[in-house]
Image (cartoon, rainbow, N blue to C red; front, side, top):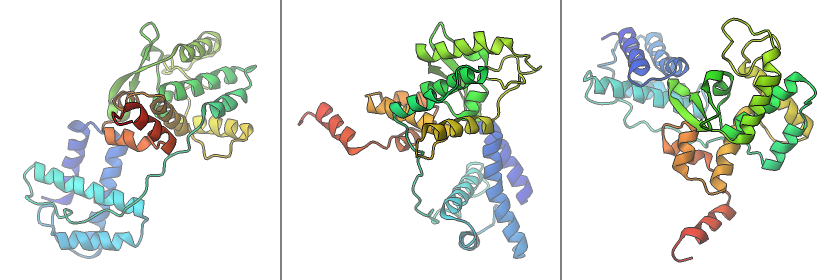
Length: 298
């Protein structure tokens, strides 16, 4: 089996059977392509089936000199996944990455906003402009529903089920979920769609997109980042805030107010509950309150 054939089959597996997005498939592929390039540069003749752990270990050692710990961990994880796929397809019996440990890295969580800080950000919006009404609806939706930026800019009018108090979201890997939407968030979206959006000259292909720019086209990720950065600066908040901070704040505030972790996982669209747990960086005061509330020996 040649490397190119193995990589192509692996990409097909990631796309069809695991349902990963094209961006995720590209990232997985880059790790394998880096190994293929290393083998060629060092004139090492081996195949995905015959490559031995010593060769892979040496590759990881040399790569570690060129990249940071986070990138190194990603490469190791990507290669482990690739060789596990070959085992799954019965091309190999062992994983040459089995004994290679990833470097210990901390998770860099985004700063969390308090409800007061979110109100401060919204207070900076000039509601006398059409963009102001749109931007308020955007922030209320990011925080009120815990959406990723891509999920927000791709939100469609046909995804709004306000009568049922839900919105339909297409997340990573085209995974579908329904997220509850509060009445206050529905109100701001409705104000924008009925009083601002319906006066735009909407471009072909963007008729069903909720949030549009002044030219009637879908907003970009960069534009959402810019909108929020400007408002945070005007509010004088000294934190590194991004659109993801609003999603993080959504999850943190829910948990701090007693929401079930499993319910938060479903709303965020996390495949694993472990990912949701990482978001929940609770302070010691809250943990103490939980223990005194729920433990029988309180």
